[in-house]
Image (cartoon, rainbow, N blue to C red; front, side):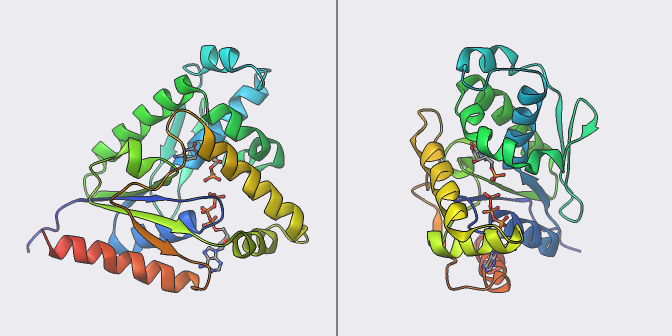
Length: 226
Ligand SMILES: Nc1ncnc2c1ncn2[C@@H]1O[C@H](COP(=O)(O)OP(=O)(O)OP(=O)(O)O)[C@@H](O)[C@H]1O
Ligand SMILES: Nc1ccn([C@@H]2O[C@H](COP(=O)(O)O)[C@@H](O)[C@H]2O)c(=O)n1
């Protein structure tokens, strides 16, 4: 049987555009590994908070950036994330971590550390990988076979997120999303940005299965063109 060459897919975009849901499903459907890079930045933020590092002090964050051991499991059916051997999949999703992650992820020493982990995981994914985040197409994997930049209106994203966080106020959710996007887009090192060669997909009026089908067909087109 002919083997299918490994494919590297980079999926970027602002918060709540559907990166995680889409990337996991595309990876599962195509038999690829999956890496949630936001979970890695959340994990290092969780460690900083738990170790009393002042989030308002970039020098203190930079000094501590090399200390935690962050390990990501890349099975799309059961992605995992541990810090120093502790499963932090739940704790990294708290409001406290969400409100602090942009400050931690803006520190260049943090980005250098996490980028190295991401490149090493992508290089060791023999069958190919879908990596999702904010700077994958621009910085982490600039030679990815396919780059996708997902977008959606702030209204659609806030409605999706407040549906997920049962009972959350849509307006407050919208403001929190936009605040995080602004911080992630304006940092000096490796900001949230669309790569010049990325395919932009506006998901505002698409269902999740439609977005997944769209990305699967983009991957298949790339494979067929090789
Ligand atoms: N096209 C879509 N239509 C409706 N709901 C969607 C769609 N895509 C994703 N969702 C839902 O929106 C929510 C956010 O999606 P997801 O977590 O995948 O986004 P994300 O871009 O990874 O967000 P973040 O960057 O904040 O982690 C989830 O509840 C998901 O089920
Ligand atoms: N490539 C990336 C991915 C994420 N971040 C930062 O992590 C935060 C959390 O990301 P989620 O996808 O889990 O919401 C995000 O707001 C960024 O600050 C990043 O910098 N680069």
